[in-house]
Image 1: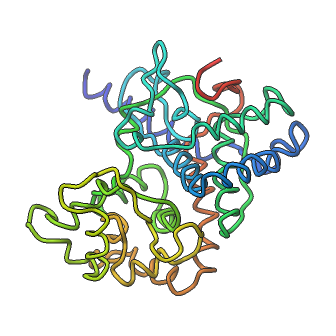
Image 2: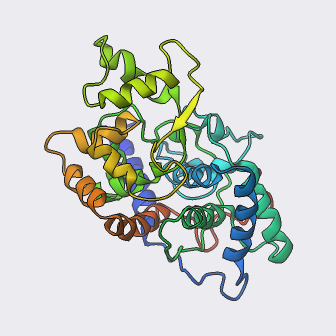
Length: 336
């Protein structure tokens, strides 16, 4: 491929990503076609929550991982799946390599509840509500049910007909530096406030030992623990995740209020009790503009809540398919 072709391709794909943020999503998109969409989603989630206290955290993670699929530079623009298009929900099929099999998604869960929501909506509003919108609505309801803020979810996304496993492998990493993860946000039109606010979703849910155990024993190949990790918290985590133990053992992302949506995630960072390396980097990276944001959110839960909703809206605006693009899947696991 010539240098000119590379430049043209890169420019077109950048327009695909950034141009999507101008798509006309609307909080009233289903006002006449499926007016009770949010209450249907809430009903399913309330039932699911009674048997799985972690379901809210699982669903907001699905929305994040769906939206953050990045561009793979290719001349085959028609096969590039980017942004909030429900592509994460697709199973392997002819011509589709499921994003569920990408490394960051192997522990993703909650798909069966998305299917339950889709079934419930198809019963009352057949062929109307997209799977991509279900993820956005479910994320908001999940936060609300956990005691967090509410916001007006913008809707009108349509579902993609392709997947992008390679792009899913480029999701922000729990092992990455702040600089690396922030670039992944800015590449998609988000900023430092979005990064810190959206990371605050780690105020509920769990993480596997494999995602943070290098901090406990051999941080960056030093043979010592991460010096930014509170020593008392270090010993607690070592009890849960012994050296050479089961990497799939889970522990609370927030040890204080693990199932509630509050600002304790940020006070944990202020006390060097962030579980994931990428979390603690938000506060412990010298000179980073994220430090002041963490302090703001740690000192004021309302400041965090006021920022979280807008940042979720910003994320949900990453390259949605609208109008005649994509489709409304009747089954979120496969194209029509």
